[in-house]
Image (cartoon, rainbow, N blue to C red; front, side):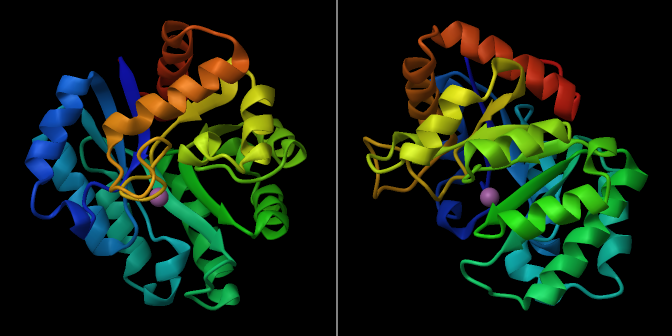
Length: 256
Ligand code: NI
């Protein structure tokens, strides 16, 4: 059994063969995929995928890259989306100071607005944090993130940052980077995070794990993320997946 808690199957890189890719996931043993929205149109696509495929669930939200597209209608639209069937989270939302595709003030404003939307909708959040750990932690504290709950997706921080996030009732999701040769920090975090706080994901089509680095990523490759975490923790695949399934139930209220 495999679970991918963060994918972008709506991405244009799946335009030509999306159905085959999803069928391949099913034959690989993937039983649950959470497809994260990046903006309004991607959130709509995410909801459509969830309606079409039993194993897919949707998160809806505006990514920090797209924070510049946020306008007075965005919150209203997301609220409408949040009521749809199989929408399990607000995401992905957060800050990205690596690319700075949107001005930082706008990123912060849009992040806070969506945290508050999640609180109102009683949904967890899926958080993107790239080179913005300080501001992410500060905003999460100021917005009482422990009342909202959610996931630090593709976690890239230190053990200390992981500790602070877990203390705020957030889960730590690990992706392909744990398999990268130079990813000492990601492996330290994988060893450190307890089983009752861990999630796994691909973030496909990005971040393809070793040994397929360079190729397009897809949810079936979550197997390599799981294998590396099992190796680091000295546990069996079934034990990891049982823990992930329990955590998916706790965070997203999905029964597997
Ligand atoms: Ni993502």
